[in-house]
Every structure is written in structure tokens, then in C-alpha cells.
Amino acid sequence: MKAAFLTAPRALELRDIPDAAVPKDGVVLDVKACGICGSDLRRWKEGPPPGVDGMIPGHEAAGIVVETGRDQSRFAVGDRIAIAPDVHCGHCYYCRRGLYNLCDGIRFIGVTPELSGALAERLVLTGEILAHGIVHRMPEGMSFAEGSLAEPSCSVLASHERAGTGLGDTVVVMGAGPIGCLHVIIAKARGAAVIVSEPSPVRRRLARQCGPDAIVDPTAEDLGACVRQMTAGVGADIVICANPIAETQTQAVQIVRKRGRVILFGGLPKANPLVTLDSNRIHYGEIEVVGAFSYHPTVHQRALDLIHRKVIRADLLVTHTFGLDEIGRAFEAAAAGEALKVVVTT
Ligand SMILES: [Zn+2]
Ligand SMILES: [Zn+2]
Image (tube, rainbow, N blue to C red; front, side, top):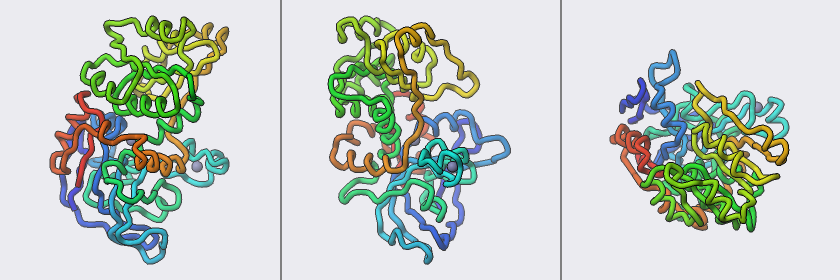
């Protein structure tokens, strides 16, 4: 089979490798679509981890089961399934409490080097992945690109549950990449008014189609003034930091209202994760600053349902599609910041 290997920073190589045998307790997936995630882009810029000479990235995948092991009965040949990357250990402190996304031994398909990713023609789902990973059947009639969109939708859905986004709230979304646009869609679906802050004109244009109530260019306009104007001077109920920029986290604490919530959704660069927040505002205003990372496996099924019902519309989010043989161009396009979701079809 053909598979894309990350061999060095910004270097992807298409290799022909032997098909892996189906595990007795697993299945083999013929990958049909795989989205490129912000985390794939970070790894692409950094190259494979030290000591690894090549790894297959990709985890936002959908495809068809083409082989099944004799000891598993959950899936049959021909089943159309979508996957997410998390594989939890099942026995640590957090797993025992059902907080699988916080598992101390969590590993990720396409990220943890020994768990090969989905930017390949085939993906082996071991018995461990079927038992402790996130694998769901796609609803009837769903396209593979739609199926691949379930994974990035999940973290967004889970974070709004954590934020309690609801009717009448004013939500500010910092950053209108694919994840920021998903935040706009979900916050609107939950009944909130949404203000988007995004410096890129291309992304502001793409974000507009997702239906926000206001869009601000933070390099030319005063976001705080816009928030005050839309909230009669009170401040935003919820601010979502959906980009990897420390300054937006600082600003989020300035524009949220008392008793409001700041959701730290985008991770900061590993080398520099410290950020300055006005602690007196947090203290006197009883502001909650909340982290949001990944999600419970059941959220993936809900994301598939919402995509199927077109609450989340793939046609607004998937702006670019490439074949596996154009893998380099696919990553360049995703990194250029002019695309929303880039999907690779195999
Ligand atoms: Zn992802
Ligand atoms: Zn665990």
C-alpha cells in the first residue's frame, strides 16, 4: 500500500510498503478520507520525534472495513466507519472515573509514533484500538469527507458543553481557522450570539458563511469596543481562545464579563506556554478560566449525528481536497492559512 511518511521538518515522502496483516482481534480499514489537523501541521513543521526516522500522520479518518480478524465480531467487511485518534489505557485514575480524555497513558493514532496514522491507503485497527479507541459506524448516506469531519467537531462540541453555552449568551471566538469556524457553528446552534476575531481577510470571508453576528479584524478594529457595544457594556459571557496565540488569552480575560468563562481551547507552542492574565480581574470578577482538551468517546457518535443532520455542514468547512499523491501540496495548503479544512482522499 501507499503511505505518507513524515521524514523531516516539512518533508513528506510517499512510500510503497507491504500491507499489514489483519490482527485476529482487529480490522483493516480502506481509508477513503483523512482531514489534516492543526496538530498534524505542528508535527509537520517540527518533523518526527527524535529517534523516529519516519512516521505516518493523520487521525481524522473515515473509510470502509475490508478485512476482519476472526476473533472480533463488532464490524463486518463493507462497514463504513469513522475514527478519532485517542486510545486510552482503561485502568489509570482517570480512566476508572470515565475521564478517558485525561488518561495518564493516552496515546494517539497518527501522533504516537508506534500508532501509524491514516494518511495511507489502509489503516490497521487493532483489538486494543477497537476496545479503548474511538471507532463508530457512519450514518447511512454520509460521505467520507463528512465522516472525517466528526473528529475535529468533537472537541468543539465537548468544550461548549463544558462552557454551558446557551440561549442569549454572547460568545467571542478568537481565531477563525477550521476549529474557530466550528465554534461559530456550534455556538450559534446552541442559541448564542457570536463575535469572531480573526486577522486574516481570507479566513474572515470563510467564517462569514458560518453565520456569526459580528466579525472583527483585531489588527484594525477594537474587539473590546465591539464586545461592549453588543453586550450593553457588560462584556462577553464566554470567550473561546481557538488559536495558539498567548496574547489572545490575555485579551480574553479583559473582554469577558464578571462570572464569565474563558475557554483555553488552542494549545500554545510547547517551548513557550506561559501567559500573563490579569489575576485581579479573575479574582474580583469571579471569572472562570477553563481548559478544554479532547472529549469523551461518546461525543464522536454525537458529532456524526450532527453532521448527518447538517447542523455541522461539511460544505462550509472542507475548502480543499487533495489525493494522497499530492500530500505535500495538501500540507502546504493547510499551512498557508487560506484554507479551512483540508481533506486528503485515498
Ligand atoms: Zn484532529
Ligand atoms: Zn488511562
